[in-house]
Image (cartoon, rainbow, N blue to C red):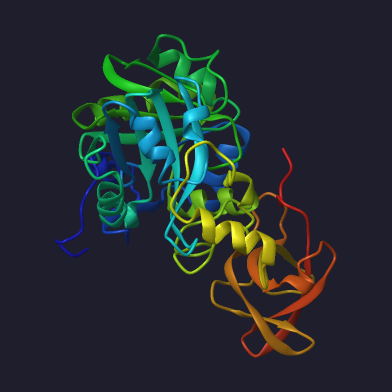
Length: 364
Protein backbone atom coordinates (compact mmCIF):
# COMPACT_ATOMS: atom_id res chain seq x y z
CA UNK A 1 0.00 0.00 0.00
CA UNK A 2 1.16 3.51 -0.67
CA UNK A 3 1.79 5.65 2.37
CA UNK A 4 -0.54 8.33 1.02
CA UNK A 5 -3.63 6.19 1.64
CA UNK A 6 -5.69 7.16 4.66
CA UNK A 7 -6.62 4.63 7.32
CA UNK A 8 -9.83 4.38 9.31
CA UNK A 9 -9.78 4.10 13.12
CA UNK A 10 -10.47 0.36 12.66
CA UNK A 11 -7.41 -0.37 10.51
CA UNK A 12 -5.63 -2.45 13.12
CA UNK A 13 -8.78 -4.50 13.81
CA UNK A 14 -8.97 -5.39 10.12
CA UNK A 15 -5.33 -6.41 10.04
CA UNK A 16 -5.75 -8.56 13.14
CA UNK A 17 -8.73 -10.31 11.53
CA UNK A 18 -6.69 -11.18 8.44
CA UNK A 19 -8.52 -8.88 6.06
CA UNK A 20 -7.29 -8.41 2.52
CA UNK A 21 -6.75 -4.65 2.20
CA UNK A 22 -7.13 -2.64 -1.01
CA UNK A 23 -7.08 1.06 -2.00
CA UNK A 24 -10.58 2.54 -2.17
CA UNK A 25 -11.60 6.21 -2.36
CA UNK A 26 -8.22 7.27 -0.96
CA UNK A 27 -8.38 4.83 1.97
CA UNK A 28 -6.85 1.45 2.71
CA UNK A 29 -9.97 -0.66 3.17
CA UNK A 30 -10.85 -4.33 3.75
CA UNK A 31 -12.25 -5.98 0.62
CA UNK A 32 -12.81 -9.36 2.31
CA UNK A 33 -12.04 -11.44 5.39
CA UNK A 34 -13.53 -14.96 5.14
CA UNK A 35 -14.44 -14.52 1.46
CA UNK A 36 -17.01 -12.40 -0.35
CA UNK A 37 -19.68 -15.10 -0.65
CA UNK A 38 -19.40 -16.15 3.01
CA UNK A 39 -19.64 -12.54 4.16
CA UNK A 40 -22.55 -11.86 1.81
CA UNK A 41 -24.47 -14.87 3.12
CA UNK A 42 -23.74 -13.91 6.74
CA UNK A 43 -25.48 -10.58 6.16
CA UNK A 44 -28.45 -12.23 4.44
CA UNK A 45 -28.89 -14.89 7.15
CA UNK A 46 -27.40 -13.54 10.40
CA UNK A 47 -25.42 -10.33 10.92
CA UNK A 48 -22.42 -8.65 9.34
CA UNK A 49 -20.23 -5.71 10.37
CA UNK A 50 -18.92 -3.18 7.88
CA UNK A 51 -16.38 -0.45 8.51
CA UNK A 52 -17.73 2.48 6.51
CA UNK A 53 -15.69 5.12 8.33
CA UNK A 54 -14.34 6.29 4.96
CA UNK A 55 -17.71 7.92 4.29
CA UNK A 56 -17.92 11.63 4.98
CA UNK A 57 -20.22 13.63 7.24
CA UNK A 58 -21.15 17.29 6.85
CA UNK A 59 -23.06 19.14 9.56
CA UNK A 60 -25.35 22.14 9.06
CA UNK A 61 -26.19 24.18 12.15
CA UNK A 62 -27.95 27.45 12.83
CA UNK A 63 -31.28 29.10 12.18
CA UNK A 64 -33.06 27.37 9.32
CA UNK A 65 -30.34 24.78 8.65
CA UNK A 66 -32.97 22.39 7.33
CA UNK A 67 -34.15 24.99 4.81
CA UNK A 68 -30.59 25.47 3.58
CA UNK A 69 -30.17 21.71 3.14
CA UNK A 70 -33.51 21.47 1.36
CA UNK A 71 -32.30 24.12 -1.11
CA UNK A 72 -29.36 21.95 -2.21
CA UNK A 73 -30.93 18.48 -2.26
CA UNK A 74 -33.83 17.12 -4.29
CA UNK A 75 -35.86 15.63 -1.43
CA UNK A 76 -37.94 17.67 1.02
CA UNK A 77 -35.86 17.92 4.20
CA UNK A 78 -38.20 20.51 5.71
CA UNK A 79 -40.91 17.83 5.75
CA UNK A 80 -38.86 15.47 7.91
CA UNK A 81 -39.63 15.01 11.59
CA UNK A 82 -36.84 15.42 14.13
CA UNK A 83 -35.06 12.07 14.34
CA UNK A 84 -35.96 11.13 10.78
CA UNK A 85 -33.58 10.47 7.87
CA UNK A 86 -34.06 10.41 4.12
CA UNK A 87 -32.21 9.34 1.00
CA UNK A 88 -31.73 12.02 -1.63
CA UNK A 89 -29.50 13.36 -4.38
CA UNK A 90 -27.67 16.66 -4.73
CA UNK A 91 -27.66 18.06 -8.26
CA UNK A 92 -25.85 20.70 -10.27
CA UNK A 93 -27.64 23.38 -12.29
CA UNK A 94 -28.06 20.98 -15.23
CA UNK A 95 -29.67 18.30 -13.07
CA UNK A 96 -26.58 16.07 -13.00
CA UNK A 97 -26.02 14.11 -9.79
CA UNK A 98 -23.16 15.56 -7.72
CA UNK A 99 -23.72 12.83 -5.13
CA UNK A 100 -26.36 10.65 -3.51
CA UNK A 101 -26.72 11.26 0.21
CA UNK A 102 -28.47 10.35 3.43
CA UNK A 103 -29.79 13.31 5.43
CA UNK A 104 -30.33 13.07 9.20
CA UNK A 105 -32.51 15.78 10.73
CA UNK A 106 -31.95 16.40 14.44
CA UNK A 107 -33.91 19.66 14.44
CA UNK A 108 -34.53 22.61 12.09
CA UNK A 109 -31.23 24.01 13.46
CA UNK A 110 -29.12 20.85 13.08
CA UNK A 111 -28.87 18.53 10.07
CA UNK A 112 -26.17 15.95 9.33
CA UNK A 113 -25.48 14.61 5.83
CA UNK A 114 -23.57 11.43 5.01
CA UNK A 115 -21.67 11.75 1.72
CA UNK A 116 -19.75 9.25 -0.40
CA UNK A 117 -16.07 8.90 0.48
CA UNK A 118 -14.69 9.80 -2.93
CA UNK A 119 -16.87 12.93 -3.02
CA UNK A 120 -16.14 14.26 0.45
CA UNK A 121 -14.03 17.28 -0.56
CA UNK A 122 -16.12 18.03 -3.66
CA UNK A 123 -19.40 17.83 -1.76
CA UNK A 124 -18.23 19.97 1.15
CA UNK A 125 -16.99 22.71 -1.18
CA UNK A 126 -20.29 22.68 -3.09
CA UNK A 127 -22.40 22.71 0.08
CA UNK A 128 -20.39 25.52 1.61
CA UNK A 129 -20.69 27.63 -1.53
CA UNK A 130 -24.43 27.02 -1.85
CA UNK A 131 -25.12 27.77 1.82
CA UNK A 132 -23.18 31.05 1.72
CA UNK A 133 -23.69 32.67 5.14
CA UNK A 134 -27.18 31.30 5.78
CA UNK A 135 -25.93 28.73 8.32
CA UNK A 136 -22.71 27.11 9.49
CA UNK A 137 -21.41 24.19 7.41
CA UNK A 138 -18.67 22.00 8.94
CA UNK A 139 -16.87 18.88 7.69
CA UNK A 140 -17.25 16.34 10.53
CA UNK A 141 -15.72 13.40 8.66
CA UNK A 142 -12.75 13.04 11.00
CA UNK A 143 -14.91 13.20 14.13
CA UNK A 144 -16.97 10.12 13.27
CA UNK A 145 -16.24 6.49 12.58
CA UNK A 146 -19.15 4.61 11.02
CA UNK A 147 -19.96 0.94 11.58
CA UNK A 148 -22.82 -0.69 9.67
CA UNK A 149 -24.47 -3.60 11.49
CA UNK A 150 -26.63 -5.36 8.92
CA UNK A 151 -28.72 -8.53 8.75
CA UNK A 152 -31.79 -10.22 10.25
CA UNK A 153 -30.08 -10.43 13.66
CA UNK A 154 -28.61 -6.92 13.57
CA UNK A 155 -31.23 -5.38 15.84
CA UNK A 156 -30.66 -8.10 18.43
CA UNK A 157 -26.93 -7.41 18.42
CA UNK A 158 -27.22 -3.62 18.60
CA UNK A 159 -29.69 -3.92 21.49
CA UNK A 160 -26.96 -5.72 23.47
CA UNK A 161 -24.51 -2.83 23.24
CA UNK A 162 -26.55 0.37 22.83
CA UNK A 163 -28.25 2.69 25.31
CA UNK A 164 -31.09 3.43 25.06
CA UNK A 165 -32.33 0.21 23.45
CA UNK A 166 -32.93 1.09 19.78
CA UNK A 167 -35.19 -1.88 18.95
CA UNK A 168 -38.24 0.37 18.53
CA UNK A 169 -36.46 2.84 16.24
CA UNK A 170 -38.21 2.74 12.85
CA UNK A 171 -36.62 2.42 9.43
CA UNK A 172 -34.91 5.66 8.42
CA UNK A 173 -35.19 6.95 11.97
CA UNK A 174 -32.39 7.55 14.45
CA UNK A 175 -31.61 8.37 18.06
CA UNK A 176 -28.58 9.60 19.97
CA UNK A 177 -27.12 7.53 22.77
CA UNK A 178 -24.09 5.41 23.54
CA UNK A 179 -22.65 2.11 22.31
CA UNK A 180 -20.63 0.45 25.10
CA UNK A 181 -20.30 3.91 26.61
CA UNK A 182 -19.12 5.62 23.41
CA UNK A 183 -21.24 8.55 22.18
CA UNK A 184 -23.17 7.51 19.09
CA UNK A 185 -25.83 8.32 16.53
CA UNK A 186 -27.82 5.10 16.17
CA UNK A 187 -29.59 5.07 12.80
CA UNK A 188 -31.79 2.37 11.29
CA UNK A 189 -30.36 2.81 7.83
CA UNK A 190 -28.17 0.72 5.55
CA UNK A 191 -27.05 -0.25 2.07
CA UNK A 192 -27.74 -4.00 1.98
CA UNK A 193 -31.50 -4.47 1.75
CA UNK A 194 -31.50 -6.10 5.19
CA UNK A 195 -32.62 -4.70 8.52
CA UNK A 196 -29.84 -3.05 10.44
CA UNK A 197 -28.22 0.02 11.91
CA UNK A 198 -25.46 2.41 11.00
CA UNK A 199 -23.61 3.55 14.11
CA UNK A 200 -21.88 6.93 13.92
CA UNK A 201 -19.47 6.79 16.86
CA UNK A 202 -16.68 9.01 18.13
CA UNK A 203 -13.55 8.08 16.16
CA UNK A 204 -11.43 7.43 19.25
CA UNK A 205 -14.00 4.91 20.51
CA UNK A 206 -14.50 2.98 17.27
CA UNK A 207 -12.11 0.12 18.08
CA UNK A 208 -13.87 -0.48 21.41
CA UNK A 209 -17.28 -0.55 19.70
CA UNK A 210 -16.09 -2.93 16.97
CA UNK A 211 -14.56 -5.29 19.56
CA UNK A 212 -17.75 -5.33 21.61
CA UNK A 213 -19.92 -6.05 18.56
CA UNK A 214 -17.69 -8.95 17.54
CA UNK A 215 -17.59 -10.44 21.04
CA UNK A 216 -21.26 -10.01 21.93
CA UNK A 217 -22.42 -11.15 18.52
CA UNK A 218 -20.46 -14.41 18.45
CA UNK A 219 -23.52 -16.54 19.25
CA UNK A 220 -25.52 -14.69 16.58
CA UNK A 221 -23.06 -15.61 13.81
CA UNK A 222 -21.55 -12.14 13.45
CA UNK A 223 -19.09 -11.81 10.57
CA UNK A 224 -16.91 -8.83 9.57
CA UNK A 225 -17.64 -8.01 5.94
CA UNK A 226 -15.65 -6.06 3.38
CA UNK A 227 -16.19 -3.99 0.26
CA UNK A 228 -16.75 -7.06 -1.91
CA UNK A 229 -19.82 -8.21 0.01
CA UNK A 230 -21.04 -4.64 0.36
CA UNK A 231 -21.04 -4.38 -3.42
CA UNK A 232 -22.81 -7.66 -4.13
CA UNK A 233 -25.42 -6.99 -1.44
CA UNK A 234 -26.30 -3.53 -2.74
CA UNK A 235 -26.35 -4.74 -6.36
CA UNK A 236 -28.89 -7.49 -5.58
CA UNK A 237 -31.14 -4.67 -4.31
CA UNK A 238 -30.40 -2.40 -7.31
CA UNK A 239 -28.97 0.31 -5.05
CA UNK A 240 -26.81 2.61 -7.21
CA UNK A 241 -23.11 3.13 -6.53
CA UNK A 242 -21.74 6.60 -7.18
CA UNK A 243 -18.97 6.48 -9.78
CA UNK A 244 -20.43 3.34 -11.35
CA UNK A 245 -24.16 3.76 -11.88
CA UNK A 246 -24.57 7.49 -11.25
CA UNK A 247 -22.35 10.56 -11.59
CA UNK A 248 -22.34 14.21 -12.61
CA UNK A 249 -23.24 13.29 -16.19
CA UNK A 250 -26.49 11.52 -15.39
CA UNK A 251 -29.63 12.79 -13.73
CA UNK A 252 -32.09 11.18 -11.32
CA UNK A 253 -34.93 10.34 -13.70
CA UNK A 254 -32.81 8.27 -16.08
CA UNK A 255 -31.12 6.59 -13.09
CA UNK A 256 -34.44 5.44 -11.59
CA UNK A 257 -34.20 7.94 -8.73
CA UNK A 258 -37.12 10.16 -9.67
CA UNK A 259 -38.81 9.14 -6.42
CA UNK A 260 -36.36 11.32 -4.43
CA UNK A 261 -37.02 14.38 -6.61
CA UNK A 262 -39.74 16.62 -5.15
CA UNK A 263 -40.26 19.23 -7.86
CA UNK A 264 -43.08 20.97 -5.98
CA UNK A 265 -41.57 21.08 -2.49
CA UNK A 266 -41.79 24.41 -0.63
CA UNK A 267 -38.07 25.22 -0.95
CA UNK A 268 -36.66 25.46 -4.51
CA UNK A 269 -33.44 23.49 -5.01
CA UNK A 270 -30.44 23.65 -7.29
CA UNK A 271 -31.17 21.85 -10.57
CA UNK A 272 -34.94 21.99 -10.09
CA UNK A 273 -35.78 23.80 -13.32
CA UNK A 274 -33.52 21.56 -15.38
CA UNK A 275 -35.12 18.47 -13.86
CA UNK A 276 -38.60 19.85 -14.43
CA UNK A 277 -37.75 20.22 -18.12
CA UNK A 278 -36.15 16.78 -18.31
CA UNK A 279 -39.18 15.15 -16.73
CA UNK A 280 -41.44 16.78 -19.32
CA UNK A 281 -39.23 15.90 -22.28
CA UNK A 282 -38.35 12.38 -21.15
CA UNK A 283 -35.07 10.50 -21.19
CA UNK A 284 -33.23 8.92 -24.07
CA UNK A 285 -31.82 6.19 -21.81
CA UNK A 286 -32.67 4.41 -18.57
CA UNK A 287 -30.71 2.50 -15.92
CA UNK A 288 -32.21 -0.98 -15.80
CA UNK A 289 -31.57 -4.34 -14.11
CA UNK A 290 -30.38 -7.11 -16.44
CA UNK A 291 -30.18 -10.86 -15.97
CA UNK A 292 -27.81 -12.72 -18.28
CA UNK A 293 -29.63 -15.52 -20.08
CA UNK A 294 -26.49 -17.34 -21.19
CA UNK A 295 -23.18 -18.00 -19.44
CA UNK A 296 -21.10 -14.88 -18.80
CA UNK A 297 -20.83 -12.11 -16.22
CA UNK A 298 -21.40 -8.53 -17.35
CA UNK A 299 -18.85 -6.14 -15.86
CA UNK A 300 -18.65 -2.36 -15.64
CA UNK A 301 -17.90 -0.83 -19.03
CA UNK A 302 -19.08 -3.75 -21.16
CA UNK A 303 -21.18 -2.60 -24.16
CA UNK A 304 -24.91 -3.30 -24.29
CA UNK A 305 -26.11 -4.28 -27.77
CA UNK A 306 -29.51 -3.83 -29.38
CA UNK A 307 -29.98 -5.66 -32.66
CA UNK A 308 -26.23 -6.23 -32.80
CA UNK A 309 -25.33 -2.56 -32.40
CA UNK A 310 -23.82 -0.87 -29.36
CA UNK A 311 -26.59 1.09 -27.65
CA UNK A 312 -25.70 1.26 -23.96
CA UNK A 313 -23.24 0.28 -21.26
CA UNK A 314 -23.06 -1.92 -18.18
CA UNK A 315 -22.38 0.07 -15.00
CA UNK A 316 -22.26 -2.74 -12.39
CA UNK A 317 -22.31 -6.51 -12.63
CA UNK A 318 -21.61 -9.72 -10.71
CA UNK A 319 -22.85 -13.25 -10.07
CA UNK A 320 -25.48 -13.00 -7.34
CA UNK A 321 -24.47 -15.05 -4.29
CA UNK A 322 -28.15 -15.28 -3.31
CA UNK A 323 -29.68 -16.43 -6.61
CA UNK A 324 -26.70 -17.79 -8.55
CA UNK A 325 -27.67 -15.66 -11.56
CA UNK A 326 -25.41 -13.21 -13.38
CA UNK A 327 -26.92 -9.78 -12.71
CA UNK A 328 -26.10 -6.26 -13.84
CA UNK A 329 -27.23 -2.65 -13.96
CA UNK A 330 -26.91 -0.99 -17.35
CA UNK A 331 -27.99 2.07 -19.28
CA UNK A 332 -30.09 1.11 -22.29
CA UNK A 333 -32.19 3.12 -24.76
CA UNK A 334 -35.55 4.14 -23.27
CA UNK A 335 -37.18 2.09 -26.06
CA UNK A 336 -35.68 -1.06 -24.51
CA UNK A 337 -36.10 -0.22 -20.81
CA UNK A 338 -39.40 -2.02 -20.31
CA UNK A 339 -39.42 -5.23 -18.27
CA UNK A 340 -38.99 -8.19 -20.61
CA UNK A 341 -37.00 -6.28 -23.23
CA UNK A 342 -34.29 -8.38 -24.89
CA UNK A 343 -30.77 -6.99 -25.30
CA UNK A 344 -27.26 -8.43 -25.30
CA UNK A 345 -23.93 -7.70 -23.64
CA UNK A 346 -20.60 -7.94 -25.46
CA UNK A 347 -18.34 -10.12 -23.28
CA UNK A 348 -14.86 -10.86 -24.60
CA UNK A 349 -15.97 -10.75 -28.21
CA UNK A 350 -19.14 -12.78 -27.62
CA UNK A 351 -22.72 -11.49 -27.76
CA UNK A 352 -24.46 -12.79 -24.61
CA UNK A 353 -28.25 -12.55 -24.39
CA UNK A 354 -29.74 -10.56 -21.51
CA UNK A 355 -33.21 -9.55 -20.35
CA UNK A 356 -34.50 -6.45 -18.57
CA UNK A 357 -36.20 -7.48 -15.31
CA UNK A 358 -38.01 -5.80 -12.40
CA UNK A 359 -36.13 -4.24 -9.49
CA UNK A 360 -34.74 -5.54 -7.21
CA UNK A 361 -33.07 -8.81 -8.16
CA UNK A 362 -33.70 -10.16 -4.67
CA UNK A 363 -37.10 -9.68 -3.03
CA UNK A 364 -37.05 -9.78 0.76
